[in-house]
Image (cartoon, rainbow, N blue to C red; front, top):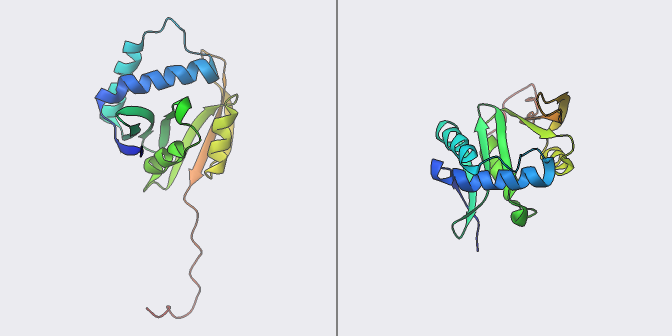
Length: 158
């Protein structure tokens, strides 16, 4: 079944919140099992309404999403069952299309994300400890590849 990419709507927020919870339990271990899904979904519904967000979907099931706020990639999550199929790359490409640069953050312990960003042309800018959790975050920067300067002399023939 082909993967379909589209703009997210607030109705997608619960499915996306489930992906984040699964990721948090698997990678970051920071989501309290007692945290209710509804408030997390409500938060993401507001984000989706306010900022560009794209989802990957197959047969009506959300497999991942990317959210951008200005030049910041605020979220890029792919369900475990869908990883390794290029979904994250496609979502990232949608989020950075037309942008001159983009900043993304990942936990230092999330080596998969750090390798992904490096493979996609991001460079590490710095690291800082996240207040409240004590987790080490890595800041990544992507910029459009510079174009070669035109050569002096007559303009090339059209």
